[in-house]
Length: 350
Image (cartoon, rainbow, N blue to C red; front, side, top):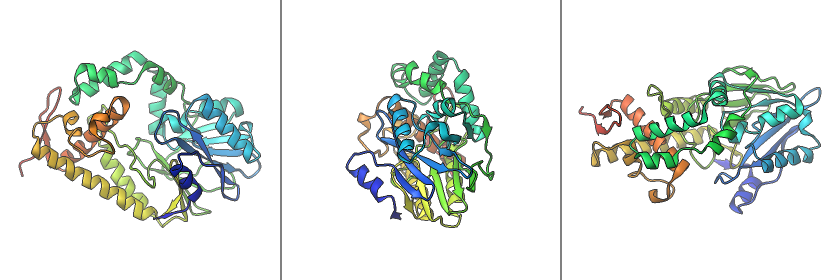
Protein backbone atom coordinates (compact mmCIF):
# COMPACT_ATOMS: atom_id res chain seq x y z
CA UNK A 1 0.00 0.00 0.00
CA UNK A 2 1.39 3.39 -1.04
CA UNK A 3 0.86 6.49 1.13
CA UNK A 4 -0.04 9.40 -1.15
CA UNK A 5 -1.18 11.86 1.52
CA UNK A 6 2.36 12.34 2.81
CA UNK A 7 1.63 15.76 4.30
CA UNK A 8 -1.37 14.32 6.13
CA UNK A 9 0.69 11.45 7.52
CA UNK A 10 3.56 13.72 8.59
CA UNK A 11 1.08 15.91 10.45
CA UNK A 12 -0.44 12.82 12.05
CA UNK A 13 2.94 11.61 13.30
CA UNK A 14 3.67 15.10 14.66
CA UNK A 15 0.22 15.15 16.33
CA UNK A 16 -0.76 18.19 14.29
CA UNK A 17 -3.78 18.98 12.15
CA UNK A 18 -2.81 18.80 8.47
CA UNK A 19 -3.26 21.80 6.18
CA UNK A 20 -5.95 22.28 3.58
CA UNK A 21 -4.70 20.55 0.42
CA UNK A 22 -5.65 20.68 -3.23
CA UNK A 23 -6.13 17.02 -4.17
CA UNK A 24 -7.02 17.58 -7.83
CA UNK A 25 -8.16 20.49 -9.93
CA UNK A 26 -11.34 21.81 -8.27
CA UNK A 27 -11.07 19.35 -5.36
CA UNK A 28 -9.66 20.00 -1.88
CA UNK A 29 -9.38 18.24 1.47
CA UNK A 30 -10.28 20.27 4.57
CA UNK A 31 -9.52 18.78 8.01
CA UNK A 32 -12.19 19.49 10.62
CA UNK A 33 -11.18 18.82 14.27
CA UNK A 34 -13.01 16.37 16.52
CA UNK A 35 -13.06 17.20 20.26
CA UNK A 36 -11.68 14.62 22.70
CA UNK A 37 -11.28 11.93 20.05
CA UNK A 38 -8.13 9.94 19.19
CA UNK A 39 -8.94 10.27 15.48
CA UNK A 40 -8.37 14.05 15.93
CA UNK A 41 -10.14 15.23 12.77
CA UNK A 42 -12.41 14.21 9.94
CA UNK A 43 -11.57 15.15 6.37
CA UNK A 44 -14.24 17.06 4.49
CA UNK A 45 -13.81 16.97 0.71
CA UNK A 46 -14.77 20.13 -1.17
CA UNK A 47 -15.71 20.01 -4.86
CA UNK A 48 -16.00 23.05 -7.12
CA UNK A 49 -19.17 22.48 -9.16
CA UNK A 50 -19.71 23.25 -12.81
CA UNK A 51 -21.78 26.40 -13.08
CA UNK A 52 -20.62 27.69 -9.70
CA UNK A 53 -20.88 26.74 -6.06
CA UNK A 54 -19.34 24.02 -3.92
CA UNK A 55 -20.25 20.49 -2.91
CA UNK A 56 -19.10 18.85 0.33
CA UNK A 57 -18.59 15.23 1.23
CA UNK A 58 -18.97 15.08 5.04
CA UNK A 59 -18.96 18.19 7.21
CA UNK A 60 -17.45 17.42 10.64
CA UNK A 61 -18.44 17.35 14.29
CA UNK A 62 -20.99 19.88 15.53
CA UNK A 63 -18.82 22.17 17.67
CA UNK A 64 -17.90 25.83 17.45
CA UNK A 65 -14.23 24.98 16.87
CA UNK A 66 -15.12 22.59 14.06
CA UNK A 67 -17.45 25.15 12.49
CA UNK A 68 -14.71 27.79 12.59
CA UNK A 69 -12.24 25.33 11.00
CA UNK A 70 -14.64 24.41 8.22
CA UNK A 71 -15.30 28.09 7.48
CA UNK A 72 -11.56 28.82 7.49
CA UNK A 73 -10.89 25.88 5.20
CA UNK A 74 -13.45 27.09 2.67
CA UNK A 75 -12.03 30.61 2.88
CA UNK A 76 -8.53 29.22 2.19
CA UNK A 77 -9.70 27.96 -1.21
CA UNK A 78 -11.54 31.19 -1.98
CA UNK A 79 -14.98 29.99 -0.96
CA UNK A 80 -17.58 30.43 1.75
CA UNK A 81 -20.20 28.29 3.46
CA UNK A 82 -22.83 30.29 1.56
CA UNK A 83 -21.39 28.82 -1.67
CA UNK A 84 -22.29 25.22 -0.74
CA UNK A 85 -25.01 23.76 -2.95
CA UNK A 86 -25.09 20.18 -1.66
CA UNK A 87 -23.71 17.90 1.07
CA UNK A 88 -23.09 14.18 0.61
CA UNK A 89 -22.89 12.35 3.94
CA UNK A 90 -21.00 9.06 3.87
CA UNK A 91 -22.77 7.93 7.05
CA UNK A 92 -24.79 9.14 10.00
CA UNK A 93 -22.11 9.43 12.69
CA UNK A 94 -21.72 12.84 14.29
CA UNK A 95 -18.22 13.48 12.97
CA UNK A 96 -19.55 13.17 9.42
CA UNK A 97 -23.05 14.67 9.61
CA UNK A 98 -22.68 16.92 12.65
CA UNK A 99 -22.21 20.26 10.87
CA UNK A 100 -24.57 19.50 7.99
CA UNK A 101 -27.45 21.34 9.64
CA UNK A 102 -25.35 24.48 10.14
CA UNK A 103 -24.15 24.29 6.53
CA UNK A 104 -27.73 23.91 5.28
CA UNK A 105 -28.97 26.79 7.45
CA UNK A 106 -26.17 29.05 6.20
CA UNK A 107 -26.40 28.17 2.52
CA UNK A 108 -29.71 26.50 1.70
CA UNK A 109 -27.79 23.42 0.51
CA UNK A 110 -29.45 20.02 0.25
CA UNK A 111 -28.15 17.11 2.39
CA UNK A 112 -28.11 13.55 1.00
CA UNK A 113 -27.63 10.21 2.74
CA UNK A 114 -28.48 6.55 2.21
CA UNK A 115 -32.06 5.70 3.30
CA UNK A 116 -30.90 3.25 6.00
CA UNK A 117 -28.87 5.88 7.83
CA UNK A 118 -31.43 8.59 7.11
CA UNK A 119 -34.00 6.52 9.02
CA UNK A 120 -31.64 6.31 12.02
CA UNK A 121 -31.01 10.06 12.00
CA UNK A 122 -34.73 10.74 11.74
CA UNK A 123 -35.38 8.38 14.64
CA UNK A 124 -32.69 10.05 16.76
CA UNK A 125 -34.21 13.47 16.12
CA UNK A 126 -37.52 12.23 17.50
CA UNK A 127 -36.30 9.97 20.31
CA UNK A 128 -36.85 10.48 24.02
CA UNK A 129 -33.31 10.90 25.37
CA UNK A 130 -33.99 9.35 28.77
CA UNK A 131 -35.68 6.33 27.17
CA UNK A 132 -32.76 5.94 24.78
CA UNK A 133 -30.34 5.85 27.72
CA UNK A 134 -32.49 3.27 29.50
CA UNK A 135 -32.61 1.13 26.35
CA UNK A 136 -28.83 1.39 25.84
CA UNK A 137 -28.21 0.46 29.48
CA UNK A 138 -30.52 -2.56 29.19
CA UNK A 139 -28.72 -3.66 26.02
CA UNK A 140 -25.34 -3.60 27.75
CA UNK A 141 -26.82 -5.58 30.67
CA UNK A 142 -28.06 -8.14 28.12
CA UNK A 143 -24.42 -8.46 26.97
CA UNK A 144 -23.22 -9.19 30.50
CA UNK A 145 -22.56 -5.81 32.17
CA UNK A 146 -23.80 -5.18 35.69
CA UNK A 147 -26.44 -2.46 36.04
CA UNK A 148 -24.13 0.13 37.60
CA UNK A 149 -21.37 -0.25 35.00
CA UNK A 150 -23.85 -0.28 32.12
CA UNK A 151 -25.41 2.94 33.38
CA UNK A 152 -22.00 4.62 33.74
CA UNK A 153 -20.98 3.60 30.20
CA UNK A 154 -24.21 4.81 28.59
CA UNK A 155 -24.08 8.08 26.63
CA UNK A 156 -24.92 11.22 28.56
CA UNK A 157 -27.97 13.38 27.80
CA UNK A 158 -25.56 16.16 26.75
CA UNK A 159 -23.92 13.95 24.13
CA UNK A 160 -27.25 12.72 22.84
CA UNK A 161 -28.51 16.31 22.56
CA UNK A 162 -25.92 16.87 19.83
CA UNK A 163 -27.03 13.74 17.98
CA UNK A 164 -30.64 14.93 18.07
CA UNK A 165 -29.62 18.13 16.28
CA UNK A 166 -28.11 16.33 13.31
CA UNK A 167 -29.48 17.22 9.89
CA UNK A 168 -32.22 14.91 8.72
CA UNK A 169 -31.39 14.56 5.01
CA UNK A 170 -33.74 16.04 2.43
CA UNK A 171 -32.42 13.77 -0.32
CA UNK A 172 -31.89 9.99 -0.33
CA UNK A 173 -29.12 8.32 -2.32
CA UNK A 174 -29.37 4.64 -3.21
CA UNK A 175 -26.63 2.26 -4.29
CA UNK A 176 -25.50 2.98 -7.85
CA UNK A 177 -27.03 6.45 -8.13
CA UNK A 178 -25.06 9.47 -9.28
CA UNK A 179 -24.78 12.38 -6.87
CA UNK A 180 -25.97 15.80 -8.01
CA UNK A 181 -22.52 17.38 -8.24
CA UNK A 182 -22.46 19.08 -11.69
CA UNK A 183 -19.15 18.51 -13.50
CA UNK A 184 -18.41 15.36 -11.52
CA UNK A 185 -19.46 11.73 -11.78
CA UNK A 186 -19.74 10.56 -8.18
CA UNK A 187 -21.32 7.11 -8.05
CA UNK A 188 -22.76 6.10 -4.66
CA UNK A 189 -21.81 2.61 -3.44
CA UNK A 190 -23.75 1.16 -0.51
CA UNK A 191 -21.18 -0.39 1.84
CA UNK A 192 -22.99 -1.38 5.06
CA UNK A 193 -21.17 -2.57 8.15
CA UNK A 194 -19.78 0.44 10.01
CA UNK A 195 -23.35 1.76 9.79
CA UNK A 196 -26.33 0.22 7.96
CA UNK A 197 -26.33 2.97 5.34
CA UNK A 198 -22.65 3.73 4.85
CA UNK A 199 -21.81 5.07 1.40
CA UNK A 200 -18.55 5.23 -0.52
CA UNK A 201 -18.28 7.33 -3.67
CA UNK A 202 -16.46 6.33 -6.85
CA UNK A 203 -15.56 9.39 -8.95
CA UNK A 204 -15.70 7.89 -12.42
CA UNK A 205 -14.10 10.76 -14.30
CA UNK A 206 -10.89 10.92 -12.24
CA UNK A 207 -10.71 7.39 -10.83
CA UNK A 208 -10.75 8.65 -7.23
CA UNK A 209 -12.47 6.65 -4.51
CA UNK A 210 -13.92 8.35 -1.42
CA UNK A 211 -14.01 5.59 1.17
CA UNK A 212 -15.56 7.34 4.18
CA UNK A 213 -14.93 5.13 7.20
CA UNK A 214 -15.38 1.89 5.24
CA UNK A 215 -11.68 1.56 4.36
CA UNK A 216 -9.07 3.48 6.36
CA UNK A 217 -5.31 3.17 5.78
CA UNK A 218 -4.22 2.33 9.33
CA UNK A 219 -7.10 1.25 11.56
CA UNK A 220 -10.14 -0.97 11.23
CA UNK A 221 -13.44 0.88 11.62
CA UNK A 222 -15.66 -0.16 14.51
CA UNK A 223 -18.22 -2.80 13.52
CA UNK A 224 -20.74 -3.00 16.35
CA UNK A 225 -23.87 -5.07 16.85
CA UNK A 226 -27.07 -3.23 17.71
CA UNK A 227 -30.14 -4.13 19.70
CA UNK A 228 -31.90 -5.89 16.80
CA UNK A 229 -30.75 -9.49 17.17
CA UNK A 230 -31.34 -10.31 13.50
CA UNK A 231 -28.60 -7.87 12.45
CA UNK A 232 -25.25 -9.33 11.34
CA UNK A 233 -23.15 -6.19 10.74
CA UNK A 234 -19.79 -7.94 10.44
CA UNK A 235 -21.13 -10.19 7.70
CA UNK A 236 -22.42 -7.06 5.96
CA UNK A 237 -19.04 -5.39 6.36
CA UNK A 238 -17.02 -8.30 4.99
CA UNK A 239 -19.39 -8.58 2.03
CA UNK A 240 -19.03 -4.85 1.38
CA UNK A 241 -15.24 -5.09 1.63
CA UNK A 242 -15.21 -7.86 -0.98
CA UNK A 243 -17.40 -5.85 -3.35
CA UNK A 244 -15.12 -2.81 -3.03
CA UNK A 245 -11.94 -4.86 -3.30
CA UNK A 246 -13.16 -6.50 -6.51
CA UNK A 247 -13.52 -3.15 -8.28
CA UNK A 248 -10.90 -1.83 -10.69
CA UNK A 249 -8.07 -0.34 -8.66
CA UNK A 250 -8.74 3.38 -8.17
CA UNK A 251 -6.17 6.05 -8.91
CA UNK A 252 -6.23 7.13 -5.25
CA UNK A 253 -8.30 6.47 -2.13
CA UNK A 254 -9.59 9.47 -0.19
CA UNK A 255 -10.63 8.29 3.32
CA UNK A 256 -12.44 10.33 5.94
CA UNK A 257 -9.62 9.91 8.49
CA UNK A 258 -5.82 9.64 8.49
CA UNK A 259 -4.33 9.98 4.98
CA UNK A 260 -4.80 9.29 1.27
CA UNK A 261 -3.34 6.12 -0.21
CA UNK A 262 -3.18 3.73 -3.16
CA UNK A 263 -3.83 0.01 -2.94
CA UNK A 264 -7.54 -0.37 -2.17
CA UNK A 265 -7.62 -4.06 -3.04
CA UNK A 266 -4.69 -4.85 -0.78
CA UNK A 267 -6.17 -2.86 2.08
CA UNK A 268 -9.54 -4.61 1.82
CA UNK A 269 -7.76 -7.97 2.00
CA UNK A 270 -5.81 -6.80 5.06
CA UNK A 271 -9.02 -5.74 6.79
CA UNK A 272 -10.70 -9.04 5.94
CA UNK A 273 -7.67 -10.90 7.33
CA UNK A 274 -7.82 -8.80 10.51
CA UNK A 275 -11.42 -9.80 11.17
CA UNK A 276 -10.82 -13.47 10.36
CA UNK A 277 -7.92 -13.43 12.83
CA UNK A 278 -10.22 -11.77 15.34
CA UNK A 279 -12.86 -14.44 14.83
CA UNK A 280 -10.27 -17.14 15.46
CA UNK A 281 -9.07 -15.38 18.61
CA UNK A 282 -12.65 -15.10 19.87
CA UNK A 283 -13.34 -18.76 19.12
CA UNK A 284 -10.22 -19.71 21.11
CA UNK A 285 -11.42 -17.52 23.99
CA UNK A 286 -14.78 -19.31 24.00
CA UNK A 287 -13.03 -22.69 24.08
CA UNK A 288 -10.93 -21.53 27.03
CA UNK A 289 -13.83 -19.82 28.82
CA UNK A 290 -17.08 -21.59 27.88
CA UNK A 291 -20.42 -20.09 28.96
CA UNK A 292 -19.01 -16.56 28.95
CA UNK A 293 -21.00 -13.43 28.10
CA UNK A 294 -19.93 -10.98 25.36
CA UNK A 295 -18.84 -8.61 28.14
CA UNK A 296 -16.55 -11.25 29.63
CA UNK A 297 -15.24 -12.38 26.25
CA UNK A 298 -14.25 -8.83 25.29
CA UNK A 299 -11.87 -8.83 28.25
CA UNK A 300 -10.09 -11.93 26.93
CA UNK A 301 -9.31 -10.37 23.53
CA UNK A 302 -6.34 -8.32 22.35
CA UNK A 303 -7.02 -4.60 22.08
CA UNK A 304 -4.92 -1.55 21.29
CA UNK A 305 -4.42 -0.95 25.03
CA UNK A 306 -4.89 -3.02 28.21
CA UNK A 307 -8.53 -3.96 28.77
CA UNK A 308 -8.45 -2.37 32.24
CA UNK A 309 -8.03 1.04 30.57
CA UNK A 310 -11.28 0.70 28.65
CA UNK A 311 -14.31 2.54 30.02
CA UNK A 312 -17.44 4.40 28.95
CA UNK A 313 -18.00 4.68 25.18
CA UNK A 314 -14.71 2.95 24.33
CA UNK A 315 -15.65 -0.08 26.43
CA UNK A 316 -19.21 -0.09 25.09
CA UNK A 317 -17.96 -0.12 21.49
CA UNK A 318 -15.47 -2.92 22.29
CA UNK A 319 -18.22 -5.10 23.79
CA UNK A 320 -20.68 -4.45 20.96
CA UNK A 321 -17.92 -5.19 18.43
CA UNK A 322 -17.26 -8.48 20.25
CA UNK A 323 -20.98 -9.20 19.99
CA UNK A 324 -20.86 -8.53 16.24
CA UNK A 325 -18.11 -11.13 15.90
CA UNK A 326 -20.14 -13.58 18.00
CA UNK A 327 -23.10 -13.16 15.67
CA UNK A 328 -20.99 -14.02 12.65
CA UNK A 329 -19.49 -17.07 14.39
CA UNK A 330 -23.04 -18.18 15.24
CA UNK A 331 -24.22 -17.68 11.66
CA UNK A 332 -21.31 -19.88 10.55
CA UNK A 333 -22.45 -22.56 12.97
CA UNK A 334 -19.29 -22.38 15.09
CA UNK A 335 -20.76 -21.17 18.41
CA UNK A 336 -24.06 -21.51 20.23
CA UNK A 337 -25.74 -19.00 22.53
CA UNK A 338 -27.58 -20.15 25.63
CA UNK A 339 -30.61 -17.94 25.13
CA UNK A 340 -32.25 -16.09 27.99
CA UNK A 341 -31.92 -12.45 29.06
CA UNK A 342 -28.08 -12.64 29.20
CA UNK A 343 -26.87 -15.26 26.71
CA UNK A 344 -23.59 -17.06 27.23
CA UNK A 345 -21.58 -18.73 24.50
CA UNK A 346 -20.03 -22.14 23.90
CA UNK A 347 -18.35 -23.80 20.94
CA UNK A 348 -20.82 -25.71 18.79
CA UNK A 349 -20.59 -29.50 18.77
CA UNK A 350 -19.81 -30.54 15.20
